[in-house]
Structures are given as structure tokens and as C-alpha cells.
Image (cartoon, rainbow, N blue to C red; front, side, top):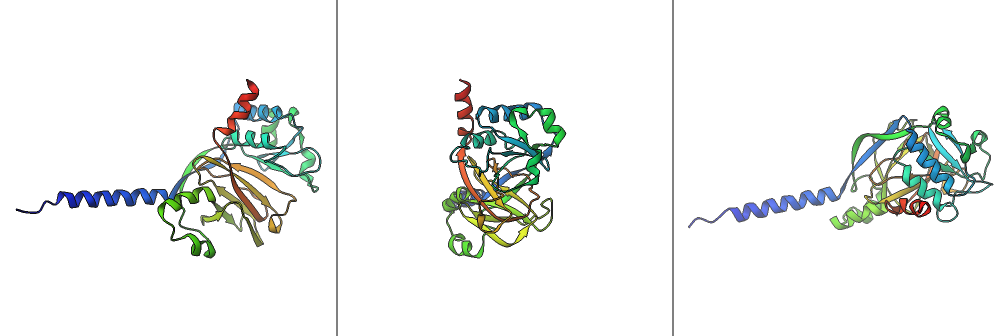
Length: 270
């Protein structure tokens, strides 16, 4: 009697399927966002949310990015008084270019800011604010781009640990030139300051989580110091816009889920 080959074939197919699943777990398909015309309903929804916070924010447009400023001379505190601002940014971050800056140091660009209650869609368009839309996709491997120290600690992690890395790591494109021409992806640990001796002229970040939002902070100084700080939010499995800004250090951490982004405003309207 000849031995049956189909059990062997099934085992081989099952093994190949498992390997494919594990490979997929180690790779994220990221939607790349690019500039487009700002839609009025997108702008109106963001402004409505912003003014519902009952905080007297100001706003100006910096290279197409609608940038929110807190009242007085202070930093942005997403875990405290500016928590609702964070929720508003989550709601619109993949539809319009948004950031927030502290006001602890003089910035000549802030002189052009106006109170958000005075901001209209027409004013945003006149100032050059842009919307966002998908322009492509990018595969990011969670096994590549780690620093030497992180490779020593994590490169041999099992598949389940690689999956967890998407909640503790994010990717970045750091360039010596404007407009983020670099295709060299780097993976960074979240909840950690990453500081460089020399500046990057443009930066872009990718959220590797399928549920959580990525809060980024960038500084034109070393060591993630709290002055001239810019904050922005990256939606799940999407990129940020490219920031043409001298950046010496940055910090990223995952905050909140998709559902939470809408909970506060829905409660307020009810």
C-alpha cells in the first residue's frame, strides 16, 4: 500500500499559512496622507469642537497647518486643561493639518493668530490651510529600523511580541532636507525622548497601532525641553503630514482610542 501524501501536503500548507500570518503581524500597511483642498464641513466641524471647549484658544496657519495656541504664557497640556483640545484634534487629524504650540517663548508667527471664535472656513482658506487625503500606502516592518540597542533587546522577539510592538513603537522619516524626501524608515520606542546633536530639517511620523492615536511632540532644542514645543496627533495606521521644522528632539506616546475621540463632543451635544 502506497503512503498517502495529502496529510504531508496539508501540514505544509498549514505551516505556510501560519508563516504568512506571522509575517503580516510584523508588518503594518500605513495610509500615507497628503495635502488637498480644505473642505468646509471638515473645517466647520473642527472649529465647532474647538469653540465648545470654552477655552479662548487662538489659531494661525503655519505652512498649511492650522496651529492652535493656548491662552496666556503656557504649554499645551493634553492630560489636563487641554484634554478636550486633544479630542478635537483626534476627530479631524486625518482630514485637516492640525497642530498645537506652546506660548512660553516669543514666536513672531503668533502675531498673526486670531481667536478661534473669529475663525471661519474662508479665513482658513485665505491663510493657506490645507486638508488631508490618502495619497498611497506604505508597508512598515516592525523588525526593521531599530537602533542597535533596541535590536539587542528585541529583534529576536516572538510573533506575539512583535504584535505588541505596534503599541510601544512608532515609525519616523527624518530628513536633512525640506519636504521629507527620505524613504529611510526608522522605528522608535514610545514614551521616550529621542534627541540628536544635529538638526533634522523635516520630519514625518507613522502610527503603527490599529486603534490608538499617536501623540507627537517635537522641539527645536535638545532633550525634549518644554519650550517652542509643537504637538500633533497621528490617526491609527496613518502618517502625519511632513513638518518642515528644525527638529533636534521628539517624543511620541499612544493616547486614547477611536471611540473616545467622539465621546466627549457627543455628550456635550446631548
